[in-house]
Image (cartoon, rainbow, N blue to C red; front, top):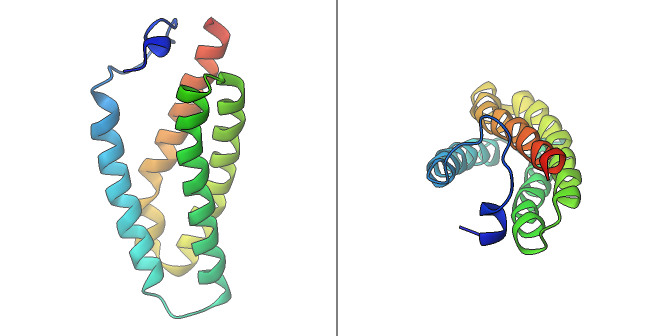
Length: 127
């Protein structure tokens, strides 16, 4: 675990470090299943938009860790997670247009991103 992060004051409900690999392992599995369901659908404008939104939100997802832990920029990471949340909402909308199952599979991820936004904002306020 990052020494810089360990030294920060944490907001209430901050889970132990062991939570994150388990939670994200489950979330990435659900995301992958949802993505493959969408990929299996016939070509359409909705599918094109859904796939591109999914890939864009994935980039934002991966960027957050780098910005937060490597750059140690909590404020820039907060902007990233806000954009991630917005793009993820649109991704879920388009996934639902193609498959209700694919859309529902992303709901736990949405809840985790909302939780991440809370944690990120709490870290900024407390530090």
